[in-house]
Image (tube, rainbow, N blue to C red; front, side, top):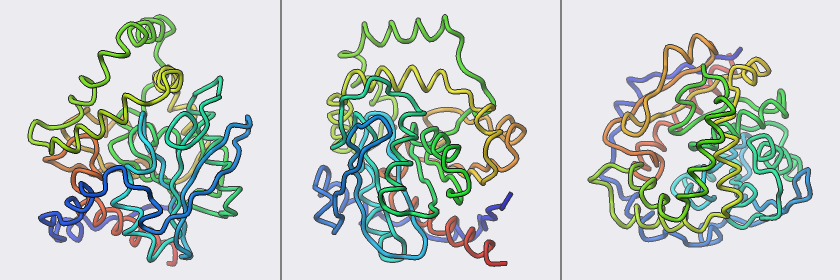
Length: 303
């Protein structure tokens, strides 16, 4: 297995900008990605559902960004423009989200993985780094299993908190799904609020909450059921690539020791003072981190 060797001193020595990029993000919340030069394209997933994706750049290496639960490609606005000068950058709207189709029967991590495979094939991408936020992490894992040696590494953003656990029991899945159906309308705003620190920007919190509330209900329910059914140990046995994630210390505890024992290629860096949406709340810090991760991986690949 290739190892990503990260010089943490290099990352930490880069200043956390008093963030002009964050200010730009706030000004462009919800703006079409065409405004930063991205072309929207569509393909079909394995089950015939339309999948929208956005593309820009022609670098030798491809970055494929995968959003999380209730999100879409616009959540990556601060990364897409920043990295498309040096990389080929693609961002996907998985089924039931953004501009992609909502006529799917099975909204599972495996089917979302099929969406990523469809985009890779349609865009003629030979190899890529898969970058997933939150639920986008397990989606990237499912895609990597299907794509085999076409994935260089999985890079996560506040995800893969407990990869040593197996799927939830059938009883627990029934309880959680029942609670979701009962509380769907009232719980979205509360759930989003808990993902942010109290001092988070209110405009950003409101925008994320509004987007979550417009997510297709079947996609939300199917996603939740599939996440709690995820058998990480089983899927991890099928890949042999690095998994590196930048996790917030705020939202959910990360079982680092258990994860490394389960999968030796698993590495986690932590960031303070930020909630669940790391790439939006501290975009310059995150971009510095991601740039160092990519440069370190590519440098080691050449040795």
